[in-house]
Length: 99
Image (cartoon, rainbow, N blue to C red; front, top):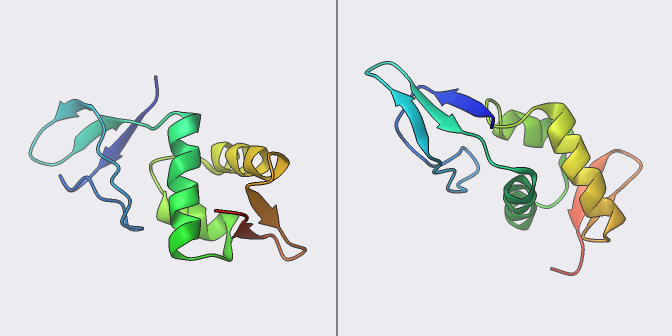
């Protein structure tokens, strides 16, 4: 089980996707929540690409700071590319296919 911390109690990520997770610990300064599993991360990334097609992995990483590491994001993105749901161009930009 992985965890991430947020400073605010809002459950909505910068991308607008609802990142509401089980609260593991909370006090007046921080909230520690479970992180999404790879399947949920896949759905989050697909949502982000529906909203803004042509994002780079670095842009996605920036949006999901504190939620998922760059390695996890890359692993999920490459799995999406292998299943023909995402296209990665020569400039490493991601495009949603057939959704």
